[in-house]
Length: 492
Image 1 (cartoon, rainbow, N blue to C red):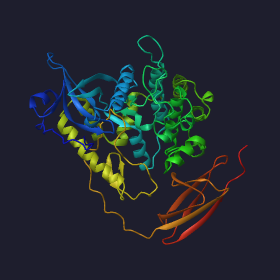
Image 2 (image 1 turned 120 degrees about the horizontal axis):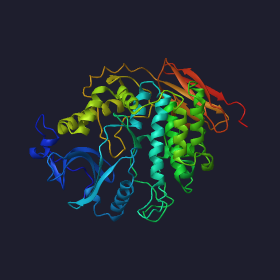
Image 3 (image 1 turned 60 degrees about the vertical axis):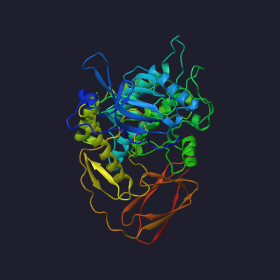
Image 4 (image 1 turned 135 degrees about the vertical axis):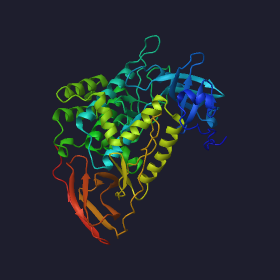
């Protein structure tokens, strides 16, 4: 069977159609008790659709859901089906306000499926990329409030038991920005337990396998040592660090470089670049990122309590505040569209609008002439080549890709000018090179071509055992500038 996407069988719903008229319109695919409105996302194992469940015999009862189905090509693969069912079994038992809610699991038309709540929001990867592209930083109290809520949800997952009361010793193993959703109502949800590992034999897992996103691995994941709940605490620490720092911690251009950074890379003090961060908050980050599990918070609940103690000394961030923060970043119209989808208002029209506009938006921000959103508006700007963060489809299985209701035409691209080059060495050699705050994946000695000219370029070197060193370099068109940076005495 082909792995190519199936043709979309959907026909347009008439303008003005709302949730109550979806079935009567006769213009949607039926899948058991669900009416499928349209596609949301497609992964390697399953596809996600926006759907409506209308209870038969109960007039007026209907609910918008996210429907996840095993791909047709994989329905006969027992291994994939079992992984899908394992995820469903694990997630179905996680009934907590900070974890995506699973409604139903079943088998229909030869395909296994599960349904879950549709979340009208954005994952943190998308939010962080947007904020960084505008040259802004996340408010420390907002960051603390988001991670505190996520920690509360993770602790619940870590404590869950089977029906006989036996602890499952569940570990998410993929705590990363794309798996933390903030909704426009200010809720925070942990999603995607697809590679979660249970400590008992009730659920299958592949021992010794590397699973998750390498840039968010704990050291024990890199070395394939046993993992436990403290592995997820470390993942939360990375996300909090990145929210506060405004850049990736361990992400490099190659997998080996990323794994090396995750295993032994140094974690730099946040207050060297953001002195306004409260020492108490930085202490929480440092403890969560301790390389030895015994030195970390021993439970996500401990991290949650530490963050709550910190927040008690600050202006409290409510769910309303978090929703307002997200809306300020992405725009009021986008928030309205996603809220309307969650309420079932003009579902087909709203979904078509957000999907079409998101395609245009993704093309803008991933092309050579990059785009930046500013308070809900898109403008064309020139971004350095090393800026690797782009707006891709959300990895979370419960959020729809979305976009602004209107996109102005991009301004003409700036005229091309001759680029400059940089040859950088260090004493001692072997330092990781960052340009403009972004990792390049290279170590010294290294040479870079096609760099922007006539603007200060921030060059930073990081080396295990030394404080980072940096220098601003202004390149001229057609020239190669050579620089040698020396590290100070090794740290005791």
